[in-house]
Every structure is written in C-alpha cells, then in structure tokens.
Length: 291
Image (cartoon, rainbow, N blue to C red):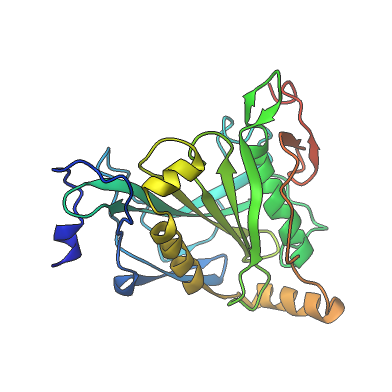
C-alpha cells in the first residue's frame, strides 16, 4: 500500500498511544543550488508539504544573490540589532501516523545568510575560530535574551546541544541543536557555514511533534527518529564550492594556521545573556539593556 494512502493527513481514527510517523521520502528529494556572493551552495530537499493547520508559504530560492540588500532582524527576535540577514529558502514537511490517524508533526528547513550590522575589518568568518564565535554569538543575540520569568532569570532556551563538525565539507562548518526549556522542547538544528569573509550561511531545521507533555512524554507518543533522519539527510547532502576570493582566504588561513579548526565539543552557553552591538561580545543579561 502506498504511503500517501496509509499515512494521510486526514484524521478518521483516534491517534494511537505511540507511533512512528512517516514523512517525505528523501530518495525523491531534488537538488537545489544557489550562488551566494560568488560561493555555490548545493543541497537536497523533498518538495514542500506544509502542515494542514494553516499553510506556511515556502520561500522560493533564486539562482543567485549578491547579498547587498541584507535587512536587520526583527527587534522582537534580536533586540541588539547587531546582525543582518538575507532570507534565501524555506520549506516545511508534514509527518503523519498510520491508517488515517492524521498529522503527527512537522519539520522545516530555513536558509538565510547572516552578516554583522557593522562589519569588523579584523574578522574573517573563513577562520574556524571566527566562525565558531560568530555562530554562538548570533544564536545568543536571537535566543539568549528569552526568559520564562524576568524575576527568576530562568532561560527559555538552551544551546548548543549535540555540537559537531559538518565532516563532508572541506571548509570549517558546525552544527548543533537548540531547545526550549519548557514543554516539549521543539528542537531546532542549526548549521553554520562560512561563504565569504563577511557572510555565513545559516540553515535551521525546526521540528514540532504533535503531542503534549514533557520532552520524554512527547517522544513516547511521537517517535522523533523520522524527523531527525530527514534533517540528517538534508545536512549530509550540503556541498559548498567557494568563490575564488573566499577560497583564497581559506587557503591563506590554512597556510598560516595549519592546526586551526572548529572545536569538536562545546558546552551549553550560560543564558540568559545579551550580545553587544558589535554582534560578537556576549554580555551578562540585562532586561533594560535594549528596552
């Protein structure tokens, strides 16, 4: 029986106590390619298949971007306004339970290019340590200020988790997870890849399982393995061909710093925290700093 019949979004039966949902087949994924400031980024993704609860429109990727029109990130997301971004791509995929038990969750892929609002001429994101510092500071700028309760200072997110190097690439690249500290966690995978001395490609994969309770309770109801497998497959398909300028930068870095590499492990950051206007300096949390 075909999966689109057996695993349908239509809910005609009560959901089971636990299930392993089925999402898109990665073997039918198509290759997407984009030129970003002269660097080519290639990856594979299935076709857009959004949640049945209000369709989220996909962002259709053009063939190339000059990256000259980066915009500040929404103030509510990033109070420091220290980074800008160019939105490149977005798709979402539904996962369903068997025999008309319906929608069981979703995973999405979002690609943006990020850069400092005020460029630092002494910084080159092709350097592994600069990339590492930028990825942690960027996520802190977006998530570190989120608190459950201002009086207690209890953080709303935790990151990085499951830190690792993206091994199939010949340039420095890192991936890790962030999670909400409340409820079902809603894990999100982040992948940071330098594409020039000033720009970083940031992939984020957000997963929501259609169940309630703690992370452990949600995972018992809706198996997280199929969601993770899709994300792993997409990340594993990423390939990068640097522009001549970026390749020259990377060659020079390797020549002068042959042992330079992204850290193999990284402990979770101490959040809540703010980021300075320079986009890189992580500061002690102050709810009034950017009020």
